[in-house]
Length: 162
Image 1 (cartoon, rainbow, N blue to C red):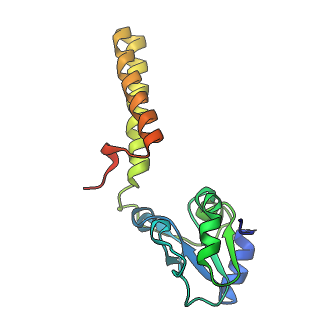
Image 2: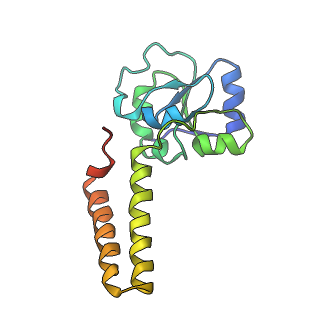
């Protein structure tokens, strides 16, 4: 089951005609940046009756379009009306020169923080291994193993918000 994609320009036209834009990203991601007038409907909370009061077309979006494409079946089931996926997500919306509201004082999403920390640890281990001692390659191996195992299990202990 899939939903048709829609370009940012076509989405803007539909929104101007009364369509509803649903941001499926989680709260932290949306707090840093969102499309003005969009509604928040986190993917983790969407169910079959989430949008039962909506009759105008629905346009779902995430950051890059991957999350909406991957979950198009779930989104289609939750939409009681005509529904679309914003091709390229908020990233494509911005590239099209359309407005966003940004608050860079908000924390980066925990998954992204974990990627930055893990990638930095791998890079540091490799650089120290080259410059100081090959023993530092163990740091890179440990960080890489942690990221790989966490990705496979879907759980990153260090990425949990407190």
